[in-house]
Length: 207
Image (cartoon, rainbow, N blue to C red; front, side, top):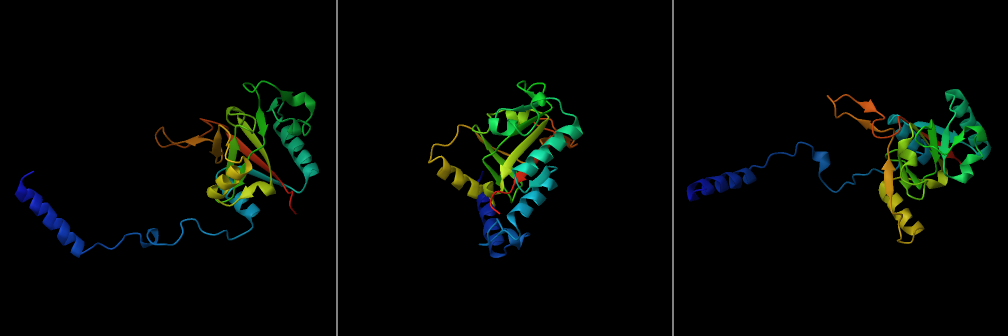
Protein backbone atom coordinates (compact mmCIF):
# COMPACT_ATOMS: atom_id res chain seq x y z
CA UNK A 1 0.00 0.00 0.00
CA UNK A 2 1.40 3.42 -0.99
CA UNK A 3 1.86 6.24 1.51
CA UNK A 4 -0.78 8.29 -0.30
CA UNK A 5 -3.38 5.50 -0.09
CA UNK A 6 -2.62 4.92 3.58
CA UNK A 7 -2.99 8.63 4.37
CA UNK A 8 -6.32 8.73 2.52
CA UNK A 9 -7.64 5.80 4.58
CA UNK A 10 -6.51 7.38 7.85
CA UNK A 11 -8.11 10.66 6.80
CA UNK A 12 -11.43 8.89 6.16
CA UNK A 13 -11.23 7.16 9.57
CA UNK A 14 -10.58 10.47 11.37
CA UNK A 15 -13.45 12.08 9.51
CA UNK A 16 -15.78 9.22 10.37
CA UNK A 17 -14.88 9.46 14.06
CA UNK A 18 -15.84 13.15 14.12
CA UNK A 19 -19.29 12.27 12.75
CA UNK A 20 -20.10 9.01 14.49
CA UNK A 21 -23.07 6.96 13.34
CA UNK A 22 -25.82 6.42 15.95
CA UNK A 23 -25.85 2.95 17.49
CA UNK A 24 -28.55 0.96 15.62
CA UNK A 25 -29.47 -1.03 18.74
CA UNK A 26 -28.95 1.32 21.69
CA UNK A 27 -30.30 -1.20 24.19
CA UNK A 28 -27.43 -3.57 23.35
CA UNK A 29 -24.86 -1.15 24.77
CA UNK A 30 -24.41 0.23 28.25
CA UNK A 31 -24.26 -0.99 31.79
CA UNK A 32 -27.67 -2.65 32.06
CA UNK A 33 -27.38 -6.39 32.83
CA UNK A 34 -27.95 -8.85 30.00
CA UNK A 35 -29.72 -11.32 32.30
CA UNK A 36 -32.87 -9.72 33.67
CA UNK A 37 -34.06 -10.50 37.23
CA UNK A 38 -36.61 -13.23 37.82
CA UNK A 39 -40.10 -11.74 37.44
CA UNK A 40 -42.25 -14.69 38.56
CA UNK A 41 -42.19 -17.94 40.52
CA UNK A 42 -39.12 -19.93 39.49
CA UNK A 43 -41.17 -23.09 38.86
CA UNK A 44 -43.46 -21.19 36.50
CA UNK A 45 -40.46 -19.63 34.75
CA UNK A 46 -38.86 -23.02 34.14
CA UNK A 47 -42.12 -24.59 32.98
CA UNK A 48 -42.75 -21.79 30.48
CA UNK A 49 -39.24 -21.80 29.04
CA UNK A 50 -39.03 -25.59 28.93
CA UNK A 51 -42.39 -26.06 27.18
CA UNK A 52 -41.57 -23.24 24.72
CA UNK A 53 -38.69 -25.46 23.61
CA UNK A 54 -41.05 -28.43 23.02
CA UNK A 55 -40.25 -30.02 26.37
CA UNK A 56 -43.07 -31.73 28.28
CA UNK A 57 -43.45 -30.64 31.89
CA UNK A 58 -45.26 -32.34 34.76
CA UNK A 59 -45.42 -30.91 38.28
CA UNK A 60 -45.87 -33.42 41.11
CA UNK A 61 -46.78 -32.38 44.63
CA UNK A 62 -45.10 -35.43 46.16
CA UNK A 63 -43.53 -38.82 45.43
CA UNK A 64 -46.93 -40.52 45.30
CA UNK A 65 -48.10 -38.24 42.52
CA UNK A 66 -44.82 -38.80 40.68
CA UNK A 67 -45.38 -42.57 40.86
CA UNK A 68 -48.92 -42.22 39.50
CA UNK A 69 -48.09 -39.79 36.69
CA UNK A 70 -45.12 -41.79 35.49
CA UNK A 71 -47.15 -45.00 35.44
CA UNK A 72 -49.86 -43.25 33.41
CA UNK A 73 -47.27 -42.01 30.91
CA UNK A 74 -45.84 -45.50 30.40
CA UNK A 75 -49.31 -46.97 29.94
CA UNK A 76 -50.50 -44.28 27.54
CA UNK A 77 -47.50 -44.76 25.26
CA UNK A 78 -47.55 -48.54 25.65
CA UNK A 79 -43.87 -48.61 26.45
CA UNK A 80 -42.56 -52.08 27.12
CA UNK A 81 -38.86 -51.25 27.54
CA UNK A 82 -37.78 -48.50 29.92
CA UNK A 83 -34.09 -48.08 30.67
CA UNK A 84 -32.83 -46.75 34.00
CA UNK A 85 -29.55 -47.14 35.88
CA UNK A 86 -30.71 -45.33 39.03
CA UNK A 87 -32.17 -47.78 41.54
CA UNK A 88 -34.26 -45.11 43.29
CA UNK A 89 -36.46 -44.66 40.21
CA UNK A 90 -36.92 -48.30 39.23
CA UNK A 91 -39.63 -48.77 41.85
CA UNK A 92 -41.75 -46.13 40.11
CA UNK A 93 -42.70 -48.39 37.19
CA UNK A 94 -43.67 -52.04 37.02
CA UNK A 95 -40.70 -54.37 36.91
CA UNK A 96 -41.86 -56.05 33.70
CA UNK A 97 -41.10 -52.93 31.62
CA UNK A 98 -37.51 -52.46 32.76
CA UNK A 99 -34.72 -53.28 30.32
CA UNK A 100 -30.94 -53.19 30.55
CA UNK A 101 -30.60 -52.63 26.80
CA UNK A 102 -30.54 -48.93 25.99
CA UNK A 103 -30.20 -49.64 22.26
CA UNK A 104 -33.75 -51.01 21.97
CA UNK A 105 -35.47 -49.12 24.79
CA UNK A 106 -38.56 -46.95 24.37
CA UNK A 107 -37.50 -44.39 26.97
CA UNK A 108 -34.84 -43.72 29.59
CA UNK A 109 -35.13 -42.23 33.07
CA UNK A 110 -32.44 -40.17 34.77
CA UNK A 111 -31.98 -37.70 37.55
CA UNK A 112 -30.11 -34.43 36.96
CA UNK A 113 -27.83 -32.01 38.72
CA UNK A 114 -29.96 -28.88 38.38
CA UNK A 115 -32.66 -27.20 36.31
CA UNK A 116 -32.05 -23.73 34.84
CA UNK A 117 -35.25 -21.68 34.84
CA UNK A 118 -34.16 -18.82 32.57
CA UNK A 119 -33.30 -21.09 29.63
CA UNK A 120 -35.47 -24.12 30.42
CA UNK A 121 -32.36 -26.29 30.52
CA UNK A 122 -31.37 -29.47 32.36
CA UNK A 123 -27.84 -29.66 33.76
CA UNK A 124 -26.58 -33.26 33.62
CA UNK A 125 -23.29 -34.80 34.63
CA UNK A 126 -21.56 -38.16 34.55
CA UNK A 127 -23.09 -38.73 38.00
CA UNK A 128 -26.57 -38.89 36.40
CA UNK A 129 -26.51 -42.36 34.85
CA UNK A 130 -23.47 -41.78 32.70
CA UNK A 131 -22.98 -40.06 29.36
CA UNK A 132 -25.44 -41.79 27.03
CA UNK A 133 -28.60 -42.51 29.06
CA UNK A 134 -30.14 -39.09 28.42
CA UNK A 135 -29.09 -38.99 24.76
CA UNK A 136 -29.40 -42.44 23.20
CA UNK A 137 -33.02 -43.25 24.03
CA UNK A 138 -35.77 -41.80 21.80
CA UNK A 139 -37.47 -40.37 24.91
CA UNK A 140 -35.66 -38.91 27.91
CA UNK A 141 -37.51 -38.62 31.23
CA UNK A 142 -35.77 -36.48 33.84
CA UNK A 143 -36.89 -36.54 37.46
CA UNK A 144 -35.94 -33.48 39.50
CA UNK A 145 -36.96 -31.63 42.66
CA UNK A 146 -37.90 -28.00 43.18
CA UNK A 147 -34.83 -27.57 45.38
CA UNK A 148 -32.72 -28.21 42.28
CA UNK A 149 -34.02 -25.14 40.47
CA UNK A 150 -31.67 -22.23 39.82
CA UNK A 151 -32.40 -19.12 37.81
CA UNK A 152 -29.35 -18.83 35.55
CA UNK A 153 -26.57 -21.06 34.27
CA UNK A 154 -24.05 -19.05 36.30
CA UNK A 155 -25.96 -19.90 39.50
CA UNK A 156 -25.86 -23.57 38.53
CA UNK A 157 -22.11 -23.59 38.00
CA UNK A 158 -21.58 -21.96 41.40
CA UNK A 159 -23.70 -24.64 43.06
CA UNK A 160 -21.87 -27.44 41.28
CA UNK A 161 -18.51 -26.10 42.43
CA UNK A 162 -19.79 -25.96 46.00
CA UNK A 163 -21.38 -29.42 45.80
CA UNK A 164 -18.27 -31.15 44.48
CA UNK A 165 -15.79 -28.94 46.34
CA UNK A 166 -13.85 -28.14 43.20
CA UNK A 167 -13.64 -31.78 42.03
CA UNK A 168 -16.24 -31.55 39.28
CA UNK A 169 -17.56 -34.63 37.45
CA UNK A 170 -15.69 -35.54 34.27
CA UNK A 171 -18.74 -34.70 32.17
CA UNK A 172 -21.18 -31.79 32.55
CA UNK A 173 -23.68 -30.80 29.87
CA UNK A 174 -26.83 -28.77 29.34
CA UNK A 175 -29.85 -30.27 27.61
CA UNK A 176 -32.36 -27.72 26.36
CA UNK A 177 -35.41 -29.47 24.98
CA UNK A 178 -35.44 -32.26 22.38
CA UNK A 179 -32.48 -32.38 20.01
CA UNK A 180 -33.00 -30.43 16.82
CA UNK A 181 -31.21 -29.36 13.67
CA UNK A 182 -31.96 -27.22 10.64
CA UNK A 183 -28.76 -28.04 8.77
CA UNK A 184 -30.55 -29.52 5.75
CA UNK A 185 -32.32 -26.82 3.70
CA UNK A 186 -33.08 -24.95 6.96
CA UNK A 187 -35.88 -27.40 7.74
CA UNK A 188 -36.21 -28.06 11.46
CA UNK A 189 -35.89 -31.74 12.30
CA UNK A 190 -36.30 -32.99 15.87
CA UNK A 191 -34.54 -36.02 17.32
CA UNK A 192 -31.54 -36.30 15.02
CA UNK A 193 -28.74 -36.06 17.57
CA UNK A 194 -30.67 -37.10 20.68
CA UNK A 195 -34.15 -37.75 22.07
CA UNK A 196 -37.25 -36.73 20.13
CA UNK A 197 -39.11 -36.05 23.37
CA UNK A 198 -37.92 -34.80 26.74
CA UNK A 199 -40.06 -34.93 29.89
CA UNK A 200 -39.33 -33.27 33.20
CA UNK A 201 -41.20 -34.53 36.24
CA UNK A 202 -40.65 -31.87 38.90
CA UNK A 203 -41.40 -33.00 42.45
CA UNK A 204 -42.12 -30.40 45.12
CA UNK A 205 -39.76 -30.95 48.07
CA UNK A 206 -39.66 -27.47 49.62
CA UNK A 207 -43.30 -26.46 50.04
